[in-house]
Image (cartoon, rainbow, N blue to C red; front, side, top):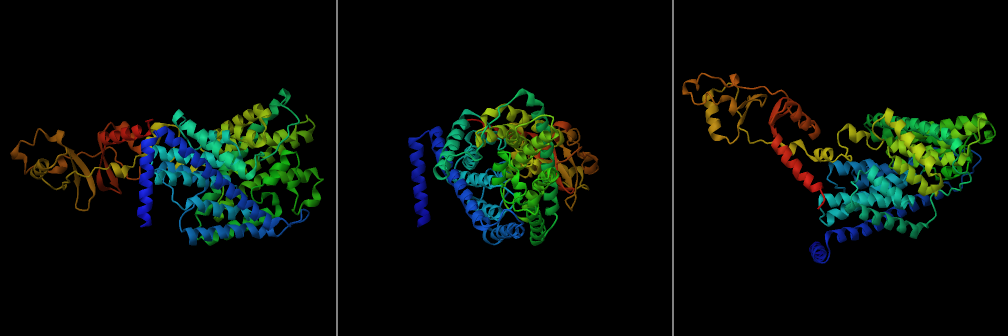
Length: 594
């Protein structure tokens, strides 16, 4: 009865919406709802992690090694794994990549459990010290909210994807308190097409989400930063060098992350992955406690030119006055932070890479300025370089220079340094692109041909599935058959192609009606001509696993109207250029503005 009642309420709401609102107004109203929900999700996750971390580590002294750092991260990851395996019993994706996959391969459908599963698992992972961030899971949670709201309201595919994107922007705006960067992120990374139809809802969702965050968390910036030195032209060469430096670190970040991920995937048993990853992570955090969790305190310290987080609660606490040890620890922390983040994921933890990117960026900028200052060549403002370094790593790792610029400016109130931010982010991005074409988010999707980009034609092609376009109403003929048998098939078929297939369904070739018109009216040949003498062997064929971009390229390269679809030499059917084009045009209309 409750199901019928809910259905009735839904129908009443839909009728009210149709009668009272136009489509644009309806979407704007939903933008407010999505903004509030995604903003609230960010607040819940942030508070849960801070409560958990304070409960576990508030009594740890700063002047000695703490063995809790060895055990806690592995325990948190184990709890997250057990929650996924025995409560959710389904896959919980890693933040932004899971959102991109849902858009490109699942028609925007995200399962309901993702509304809360990313919050719980990432809170356990990060709250206990996993060396990852909360931003990715928050964005994934927002996307799940948008997707399920769109599904419940029976929205079209285009509006469903818009709801997901609005929720992603809202989640990012709320957790970073950065509405402008959230909008830019949606365009750069989530690949939203920027039109007036999408821009206004995007603005509404971002502002609503950040206001929700303000209501619960206050409106202070995430990383308070006081600018004491403005931008001087004499520092320009050093900002350029910092851009190159952060770009190279971004390449290291991406390649090392991919390599470690592949290594862990080769381990079949989850408990072996957990023991290996948890042990490596525990050792790293014991010796370098600044790698614990998000690294929020360490980032704030570095922004004031303070590198004491390198030593606090570590075995190296008594060596703070040694410049050699300071520089060595800078290098080791930069090197091992990427590994700590990657093994957290590999062991089974859930989190994001925004916080690790900010951490590496601030340490890279501070390290760069301290090295230059130590040489005596010039005196650089360490705080400025620490802040600008974050934009370089965000731009290089995410391949999102605009996000790097506006995000760092917003979370630090550092708009006075917008020129250095632009210089470093742009050069870092350009440097990273020289060595690796895809970001850490998109690498795996791009390798499988599942990545959506701003290239609309390519996006539409990626939505087409070979198996849905296969035509199977072709009458097969055996290779040993005679022309008489073929004539009979021709009379029964409404197609002009006849696949030649043996008794084991092995494809031998096909016969075109146009090729045999001259002999089909010669009865004297009916029992003499064998089918194989009339058969054509195709120059290429389509595999069911081929992407539609590959199929389209085959049609263009070979100038054919029909291509056979084979799997391991076995005949499945044909795919026609006309059917592909017709389906493509339908999807283009679906993508187009109403």
